[in-house]
Length: 58
Image (tube, rainbow, N blue to C red):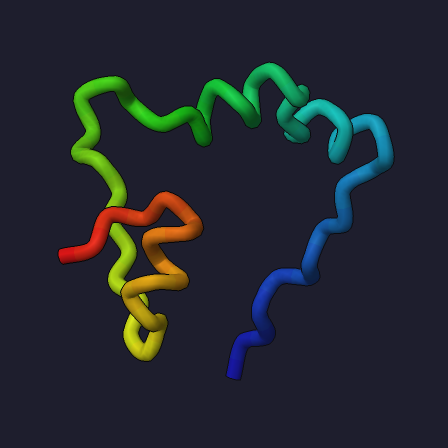
């Protein structure tokens, strides 16, 4: 029976090389302009309260 190869741990410098900068993270997570609008349905919220918050009442 063969043993799996040992796990090689990365050095601190190697780990830093693979980390993303904040600019790269923000660019990766940015919402595309062509993406559809986000909508959230809240249940159990009185219409008057939703209206006071400026939420659209469907």
